[in-house]
Every structure is written in structure tokens, then in C-alpha cells.
Length: 201
Ligand SMILES: [Mg+2]
Ligand SMILES: [Zn+2]
Image (cartoon, rainbow, N blue to C red):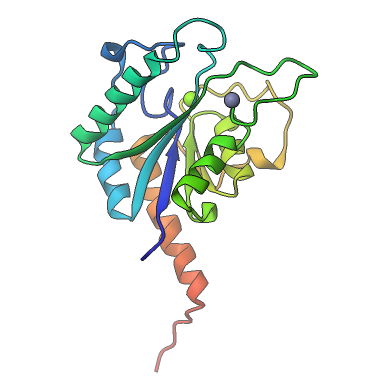
């Protein structure tokens, strides 16, 4: 059986407009382009997993159970697009205080992706991570996924120091662009892997 290929998706600012700490399902809607792009990516062989930082739990802004309603709404929105949402991982922990050991799952750490890899027996280098800030890119690269920075103007570029994990494989400003770029990238790298050489006979 062919192995599963996953596209890990950040939620807020990537799939839906970012309303800070929102857990009201009625305020959750997909960005333009997402609904049309998801079936293309599914056709290209991918399944979808959301990986989201939810520090509102640790901060006491909402109860962890509320995230089930958020997940249900995301599943519904994916179903409207005609694709299943395979899974939904969240980090309920807070920002790490200086000198404290991190939880390991809050992005830019790669814990949620590694957990998914164990659960679904994934080869992470065949998976993608997509997000609207460089912490998403870093989490993806730390897990050795391919990465896309979806620039919606949400990255400040100055909160964390530079490191090589913050360089994405692809850059996009619109979800549909991202889907086409990802598919072209896969086609190109597949061709290279086969070491095919065009010859004229
Ligand atoms: Mg985001
Ligand atoms: Zn965590």
C-alpha cells in the first residue's frame, strides 16, 4: 500500500481569518480559495491534518472542551469542500517563559507533526506544512517536512532571531497559488528523483 502523504495546515490566518482566541464556531469561515484548492491537493495524493497552537487554554480564556466545537466546524467546512479532515492536533500550552523548558508541541516546535507521524506511520519528508507565520515554517522544517509560507501579512519578521529552519520551500500570498505551486514542486522533484534524461533518438 502506498504510504500516506499529509499536508499539515495551520488554522488561524491560514485556513480561516485569525480572530484571536476565538472558539465560536459561527465566526469560523474559510478564506477565499481554500475550498477550491483543497480538492486539487487531495487529487494530488494528500490528506489533511490541522496543527494549531491554542494557548487560550493555558491562559484560561476558554475551556479545552471548546476546541471540540472548533474541530467539528473545521470538519464541516472541509466536508463542504468535498474532502475529509483526517485529524486535528492542538497545543493547549502557553508561551514558554524565558528559562522554562518548552512543551515540545507548541509551534515552532515539531511535536504535533511528530505525533501525527507516529499515529499514521508517515514519512515526514513526503509531507508538507503550510502556515501564515514563520513559526509554522520552522515547525515543518524541524520535522523535515516541505514547507510553504503563506504570506497574509501576519508575520512580523522580528520576534525571533533568524535560523535556517525559518526558510520555506515555497512562498505564496493566496491559497490557490500555494496549491498549484505545491503540485508543480512535487512533479519537478519526482522527475529529478527518477534521474530521467530526455534523449532524442
Ligand atoms: Mg496562523
Ligand atoms: Zn504544547
